[in-house]
Image (cartoon, rainbow, N blue to C red; front, side, top):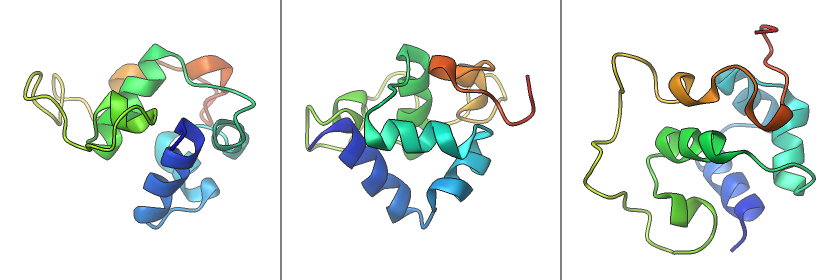
Length: 102
């Protein structure tokens, strides 16, 4: 399974459309569509944010493994009191324009 397939599958498991998922991550729908069409790829920090968000390993997210489990360290979840994705998105992942313009 490829990254685009895995991302689409994980998004659908949560019941999100591309639009609602983009709103959840505070990026544009175009960004999510580009990831799922493989016309754009998240950078390292974006991949970490997505793996954290879905609570899966990076290898699982990018299709290198069928094991969802994350390593025991660092602990999954909140980092320094911040929500999962906020720490890593840092404004503009892989050229995506944040919805809030930041």
